[in-house]
Length: 255
Image (cartoon, rainbow, N blue to C red):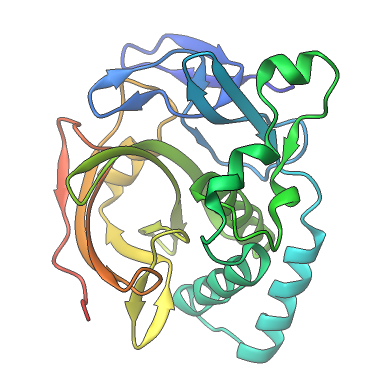
């Protein structure tokens, strides 16, 4: 198991045991680093569920098939810019994990902490391939590795969100490319040029640097409204919600 360095707003250093939510809608939680900018391997333990008495963690597992799917899309689509590469990653995520019709069974793939201590293997993201059960954590972790493999500067992030008026926790990715910065969400994508795109919006550098921080007391909110083709409806989302700094994105394309 790795430990993850976080630096608070006063410059004090802490090492966390897991990657996971540490700030959600005004409440802070200890023990987690909320972001990670490296490729996931099986030394990285990510918090899947943090309910009272129901702690669950997962590792990436073997996602070789996802790389193979991506390679086929790259050969077919021949992408030339960050949007086209991202669209290939989005297609790969959908092919690899499937839809959301079986998400009620998701947690059955991740034994709780007590069970793992008793000898069971920790759950793996790769166990959810083609099960139609993967949610944002698994999709963002896999996106992270695919984008890293393509050579992009990408960060996995999990934070509190406000989605259509309801509070929740959500995982997504942050991209830096050619001095521009983007919010990438393969779970709640948008439409761009009639294609499903996980690049939700471009964001300023200062907002990117704040939301990218793994520390619970550093962050920035991003508010965006866009059409989600996977659910066929408009989404009003605030990422890293209830932060002091809020970036309002110009209204995105809707159906």
